[in-house]
Each structure stands twice: as structure tokens, then as C-alpha cells.
Image 1 (cartoon, helix red, strand yellow):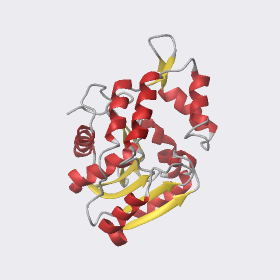
Image 2 (tube, one colour):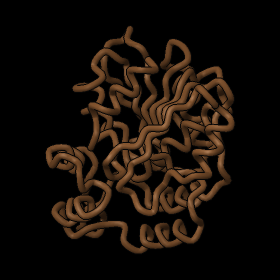
Image 3 (cartoon, helix red, strand yellow):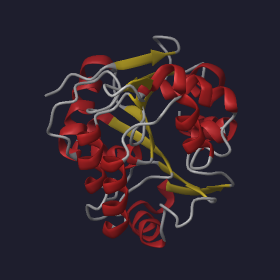
Length: 258
């Protein structure tokens, strides 16, 4: 099983959170939330396979990602943790709770990407393969500002560039990710809907500026049917980068379950 690179934030004896980033992201993306809004918690923030400084070698499927996360928790956590997952990380959080319920005591799902439209994913995967890099940092930042990062403070975007943008072999720049891994992983988001085990306290956050929405009625209905009173659904007026755009609100939702 690939051994994940990871970051830790907060006191060693604090309540534990596993924070799982989304597609093309990295673990250090959680630093602002952890240091400035959840300083009492111990946050374990890995780079997923194919991302950051974790191994880039296949397989890149959800099962392998989940088993790597489980191995990380087994070696690093004191007991069951709250799992905070964004986008692709939200899908992985659900699958982790299903495969290893003994490791998960609660979930906070930030605009999770699960059971998405296959045609849309084909288009996104094709664009990822065709345009994997940028002329320079300004072009990379422009793409984010005009996309999911539109409402993220500029200082966090600058930090993202510092942490995650690297020179490409062709003289351009690229995010510190494996393009083949990301192309493959987009397809994983077309997997059938999955919901966590009954009895798992769960907060589902929908980013209301995302259109078409990642969080659809089918997911909400399935979660309500499985979890009942253990589910809270929260709508936030933001784009897809929920933790960066609404850190105060996210921290409060996490704190409810800590």
C-alpha cells in the first residue's frame, strides 16, 4: 500500500481530524483552516496518491486511496477520527467510513463530488490531459480566480502557488500532481452513489454558487434515508473551495462534531 506524505497541525493531544483534499489539491491546503480556525484540534492532512509529495504510481482508484488513508490513520491516529473531506475528498471520506467504520466517528462533507455525470467527467478528464500546464504563475492563478477560487482570499491563492506550483519539463509551470493520476481519478467520480453507514454523524455542506451543483437531490435523499437524525445539511453562499472561502463557518460545523 502506498505510504502517503502528510502534514500535521495543532496539539498532539487535540481531538483528531483527518482532512482530505480534493482533486488536484494537496494536504497543506488545510493549513489556514487548521492553524487559524481549528487550533485546538490535531489535523492530519495527507497528499492523496498522485498528488503533492505522495507516490504518483498507480493504481489510482478509490479503493487504493481509501486503503492508504486507513493505513495512515492506523499508524498516526489515537483512535476514530472526524473526517473532513472536500470534493473528491468527500467521496473518499464516505468510502472510508463504509470500508473502515472503526476508524471514523463523524463526517463533514464539503461539497462532495460523488456520482457525477459521466459525460461531464469525460470532458473534464480530456481537458486535464490536453492542458496540463501553464505559461507562468499568473496564468495558473487566473484560471483559479475565474473558476472555483473566485471567492477565496488572494493571500491563500498566493500561498497555493508557493506550495503547489512547480516547473514543468517543457519550461512551463504545473501543479504538483500526476496528470495521468488525475485523468484516471476523474473517472472514479462517476461511480454509483455511496452513503456512509447508519449511525455516522454527518454534516453535508452544499456550495450554493456551484452550478450545476455537485450536491444533488439524489445524494441528499440517500443520506437522509440512511442517516436520519444523524444528518445535517448546510447551504453556504460560496463557490466550490468551501474551507478557504468560509473558514469560520466550516470550523463551527466541525466543532459541533468534535
